Amino acid sequence: MPRQFPIREVTVLSLNKTSDVSRITPTSKMASFGERSFNLQALFNFDHLDSRFQTHLKNVYSCLALGMLSAALGAFTHFVTGLGQWYFLTSIVSIGLMIWLASTRHTKEDVGKRVGIFTGFTFTSGISLGPLLELVIRIEPSIVSTALAGTAVIFICFSLAALLTKDRMFLYMGGILFSALGWLTLAGFLNIFFGSEMIFNIYIYGILLVFSGFVLFDTQLIIEKRRRGDEDFVWHAVDLFLDAIQIFRALLVILAKKEDDKKRRRN
Image (cartoon, rainbow, N blue to C red; front, top):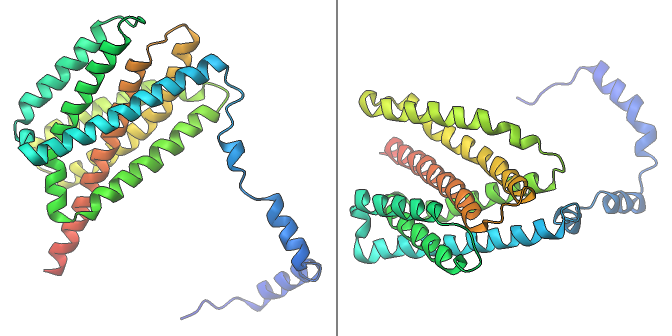
């Protein structure tokens, strides 16, 4: 049944708006639209950042893009070879490569080697992601593209928010984010024994929220580290890669679970 507005409300609205409506013309509408139009150029204007920061960010995001391509190739390798079934082994290799990368100093002479290690790390991470992708595709193939799009939107929007904010407000989120991640990790571990759907939902949605926050935190932390002389763009790309992968994993699980529940209700 449609909502019934009291006569008094309609009368008040009429008294307040009649004089304004009479002045609206097509020309004024177009002028108003022009004043409020979305300025895409302003959105990507980073003039408040020094050129050295802009150069550093270009290196970071270029390295990150290479890592994403390498991870995609790793996931494809799983579909061809089935290497992802050795999840424990590929995870150890991935962690080993990350430790190796962390133990090497950032120098001009070693940049190529460190980028190679980073590529190997992201490649094995992609292989480890393969079994989850395979399971999701069995439920509904379109979930993968939806999760990719969602990850891209979250990552780009939160990165821009961090880059366009001139103060360092998001750096203060670090303590909260690490504390929340610790509690979520504990909840995920305990749920192995309890098998509670409620705890699982808290865990997976919490992971999505926390790592979205880490995009804000890590982006501003990268700028702050560069301000203090840290030029290690390869390791900075690792931070953002881990954020993006965890967001993607969480979206895959959330969307797959919803689709699976929907199919079960139909049957």
